[in-house]
Length: 140
Image 1 (cartoon, one colour):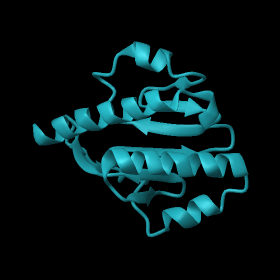
Image 2 (cartoon, helix red, strand yellow; image 1 turned 135 degrees about the vertical axis):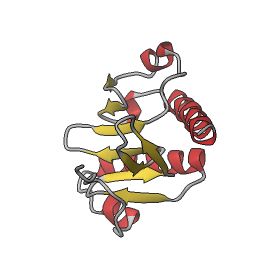
Image 3 (cartoon, helix red, strand yellow; image 1 turned 90 degrees about the vertical axis):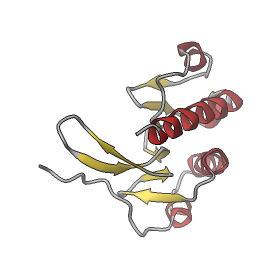
């Protein structure tokens, strides 16, 4: 069975964020960092080369494949910021529709800038995701 490539590294999150050339992107990352830290009450860790993750849990697929992953996180990319939300199942779709300028993937939100979205609503979504993930972990 192939091993998961994205794992926790020893890179300091602040050093990674401070290395971002684009000032707007760097400031948006600092805002997301603060927001997710407040929601999760966890210290951020670098996962792989460019993902900042908060908290962690172990998962196991029906195939028997196991791994470690983060509860929520984000990654600054050239064209957008990917926001990883693991617990999306119980969050009403209208909350995402009212968020602002976003694109959605299965477990991700893609935004260009934090000013393009309703940050209070994003925080509410992160809180709901955190609650759902904690319930899933505790019910194992």
